[in-house]
Image (cartoon, rainbow, N blue to C red; front, side):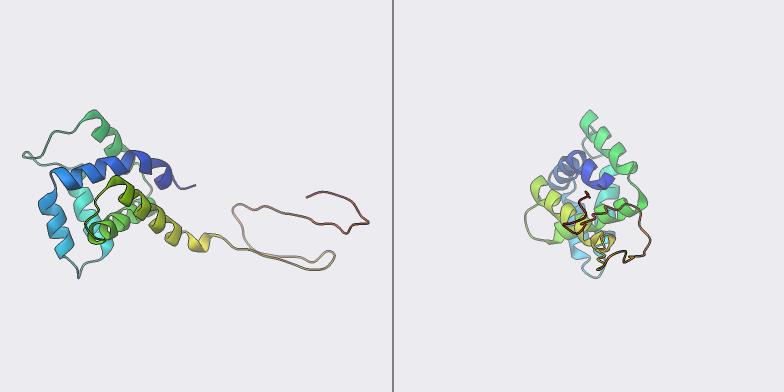
Length: 149
């Protein structure tokens, strides 16, 4: 599982709370950038949330943990998060943590849709060749041979 989905529980309340409480102007500005990509809209809001100005509410200990979690994401997961935030902001009026969590899960699933391949082969000793990082092999012997997977 991606670090992003693991970290989402920490990230989601932080971003959602910031978006609804102090970053209203940033959300409005980002939403109005319809020509920009979702990733850029999310990057704008996330940058503002992570690097607060003097007039913004002070960062709590929970906020600091969430910010550190975001900073530790891989570049790919950070881009997925930024895109998910951008889509979430323009998806309607629901800036809830639950809605953001759903958007992150959708973005993660779409990004990683090509990570799964299924290969089948038929006949005794038929090879299936490819490059895999992780694989499960299931061997189904003929009934007269016995055996296990």
